[in-house]
Image: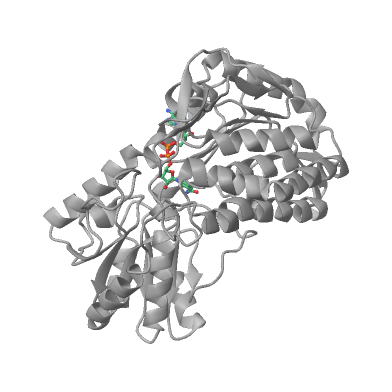
Length: 476
Ligand code: NAD
């Protein structure tokens, strides 16, 4: 029986929670139980107008704050994120279906790491530089529209909002329809930190209405979007008409290339963990494993064995390593890709498209490893956004480079070799924004973003901060 749930009717605009100008609502569902968790307002263009107007009013005052004033507020926000780790974790488990261990470490932990990284970056950043007879000032780029997806819902909010605020820009955030609850929690933490009214605003709503209104709004100066490549194109078109600066973090089809001489078992195990994390709903996931033809069968056996450890289950159970997909649409989409791959000649070595009889409720899919995938197959070209690993053989290094670079995307990747120099030399040939060598760790200060159809601009670290700055030169 459906329990009671919260019905939120407000948006966070101009420093307070205010009734939405639209009476429409968006239900937020738990992907494991399919129960309604809450409803949030489906914000209208009028909500977006009010939020952007508040941000515009706040812009000059916020731009004029000192670094120390912004640092003090951002430190309070960081402390709020630290105190709210358990609440963030349970919220993301409930609305995204992420396993609780992963949710705590990544969905709650990473935003804290990123916020902390911006405190030290802001403290040491030089907003003024002398170049010959000029002094060049880095100034805030204006009112920022942040449009975010559901797959790393708080990380993607923080990766935009925190550097924008650090740069001196006010923000209007439109989070994804599936995960607005952690966005509301974030707005509460911003409010509790005591930022001036209008500096941060939250409008929940659909992409087609609230998102589109925000991306095209004449009073927005910068649009920072993370989501699908198809929507990214629309956002860039709207922003382009208004001559707004735009940053796009889009999809990926990243390759993990294992060169002869590498530790094959480790490379395959790390790849399987990488692609099944967050139920495969990771833009930078290594969804294509490329191994030398001589090692192909061995790699498949290792991948199938590693996949056995991922048994879908209740995300709230600490033993669960893989939860459901976010919604029914994604489940249909992933199963459709699996069926299409089999039709095109791929072979299942683990998982497959069949429903999980033991989990009749919830949007669960079998974590799947596919063999006999050729580079032109749909499953090797398009982003599946589910726990699906395609294993492809290559003949030699040139062939591996050709396959790795042979999609429209270029977001991330991995290279494994006998030593890091060999791996680095190979990585330099890849058309992609980030490559991990022999399992190199994620670095929250390194620029993150895509080549080709994976996007424009960079997030995180200094490069992420500079997306929100513009430059003024004074000549002496
Ligand atoms: P999506 O593109 O459907 O939605 C993303 C956001 O855009 C949501 O807030 C949505 O409401 C909004 N939106 C939808 N239509 C809009 C429109 N016409 N105008 C303005 N806004 C609109 O993507 P999704 O399904 O939420 O997320 C999955 C996609 O995001 C995947 O393709 C994934 O690879 C990508 N992604 C990329 C990165 C990255 O950093 N490169 C990170 C995470 C996700």
